[in-house]
Image 1: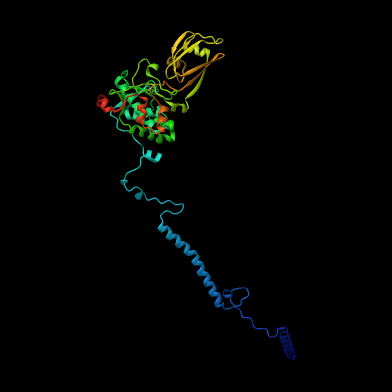
Image 2: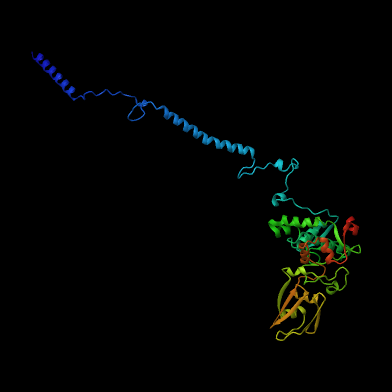
Length: 405
């Protein structure tokens, strides 16, 4: 009885709870479809089919992008194929640039360093033994190489080519004449100093010129090569081919500077020298220094008596100082003046010497030669102008004994 009442009461409770649940339910709410996460496109999945016109627009844009990117690349490739040199890039075909170059040949280090082929002097028929004053050693130098070393040392390499050629012929002539007629020495032929001709070897010139060595040496060697074996002769004999830096406007007769008259060393006008940097200079010496150099007693508190005479070229022929007479060249040497064309001004206890020209003045003026070359004269014109009635000959014809040795 008790269990039956409990069962009826429990059934009533379940029926009541079912009614309450139905009241809380939202009317007409559709059942939501559950979609797996792997198939969802967004947090709120709403499956829609894309429109056909959108697919068409996307396709057109894709084709345009491909066209814009591809066409320029094709044009550039065609341009490169037709033109081997493109902007900023140099294409060098060595076989086409040098069709005559033999297989296996290599450029010399000099060509690589200087960017040009080294010029060599001509063949030398004999050697010259040169006493190097700095180390008192004797070097045997091929004569054409020796001439190049003299020209490099005696004349500025910036000079005109025709002036350098004239210098080469004069240097070669001096050498041949001295070997035939000069003072003999048992151990050497010439020194590398002003006693004969200034000469510098390859190492000295490299140190002097540095990076410009090959360019300058090529120019000198070219001048020597183009005058190979040529010397200046008078009556079929090599001359005393004297030369100097700068005249005072005229060269000097040989007898006015040295003792003897030489037919081919005549005074000529040389107006080109007036533009030379060494044309005019001043030297100031104390009276005491002049007195010591001349070995003449002079008083610095009194005016020094002087008498001066001149040569036809305007240089000092003789000068008498306090009763003591000197030749112009002798006076110049004792005081170390640049030229024997000088004037003297006394200022208190000093003497001011103003000189014109540089050197003894006999033979060829180097600055005059350069001036003539700048006006279009060749080396033969220059030689015939400064050396009177001379000829240009081959050393093999004039000095066969030197060549045979």
